[in-house]
Image 1 (cartoon, rainbow, N blue to C red):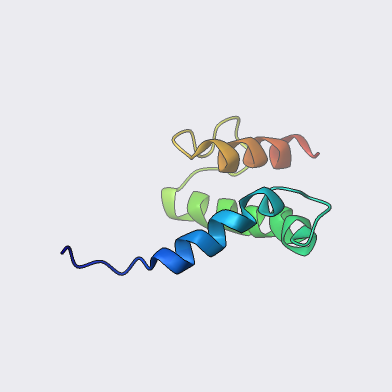
Image 2: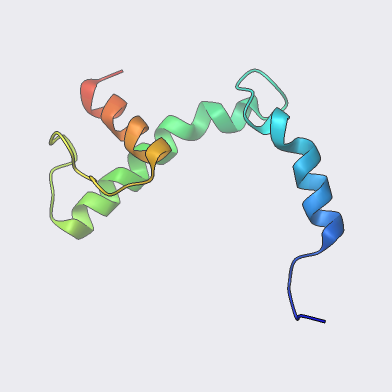
Length: 78
């Protein structure tokens, strides 16, 4: 037996919610609505730590896809 903090019941519960999680009009809509503000906050603070301008073309070039995509949209004002 391998020691793990992963509970099969929790994996099953979150797997069942996966489709709902990505629906911006579903039960998790409030999370989708705060995402732009949350990502702007993260971007600004990461850029501050990295000494880069958050409005530069690629402030966080190595960011994961969804974060990078949203950062680019913030930069363009959309």
